[in-house]
Length: 383
Image 1 (spheres, rainbow, N blue to C red):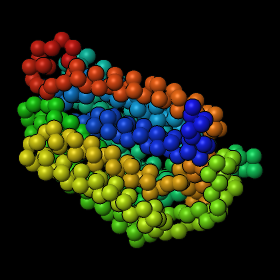
Image 2 (cartoon, one colour; image 1 turned 45 degrees about the horizontal axis):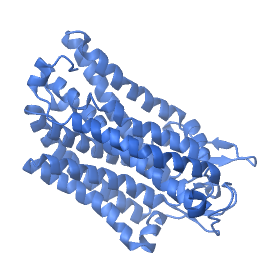
Image 3 (cartoon, rainbow, N blue to C red; image 1 turned 180 degrees about the vertical axis):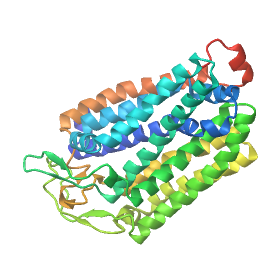
Image 4 (tube, rainbow, N blue to C red; image 1 turned 90 degrees about the horizontal axis):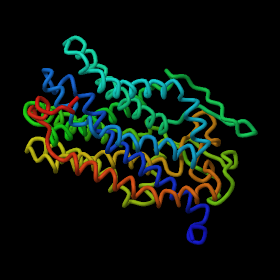
């Protein structure tokens, strides 16, 4: 049935869209976990308040990371060239992210093992690192994708990465990292406002307002960078073989400042996507001020989803441009797995994705409600 409905080109676009769904799912769910970690030393001023903040995410953070695992698995199976290049070329950056992420489960489990205030404070800062560092580095990765990464392929399609870890920390990428950090701090504050009680929620609303306004301003500034050409851009100049072989050497590409706005010029309705990103952040800021907790969290989710989607829409059809050999850039139509692989993965996705969504919805329904001091002092299962 899938062979009859979808040709190779369509399957490639479907998997590009599904990869976007997985990344959005990760940013929307695990994003507020990272944001809570980044806010922990600032919204909570004593041990009880910090335990309240931790317990808003403690029961759900592991399930939220399913989206992260699925995203990595989708890149491995659907876009093997992208997986090989990014996971080897960005090895040190990925190691930094994984080391920071490891601090979260260790911090959750070990923080309350001893009553010593100094012990707990060290783990609080470990949880801060486990939230702030990945939030920043994920944005830096997107910034480098927009700017272009130094790599090329040999004649036998072996990827060669020519950059360094410090080369990834360029001004454009760091700017995108600030967008990501502000966005996820906003999202974490919206979650704390929605789930926590007392002073933790009050302080979260104050920090969330500032983060939401910063998100809107920084994201709009990113649009100016794209318009001015400072963000760079790439354009395929040869005919695109939508259903051709997966060989990134069979095209020509030019670096062209401002090219990341080409899709919006060709399809003006796409401006709705970044527009909703800015509107969602501004509405979240207003929600923090008016204490509309549920609406604030929904607007924060909208902003996060649309900001991540904007990156994908701007890059399309590129997955990862090459700054040194633009003609060897990876695109949706020359870096995918075989048609049969994409087809079989789609069948598995149609079967298992509803199960994951249903389970996730059930977990959040069971854990519905706010976390307050009484849940910490009277609950035997609290962190």
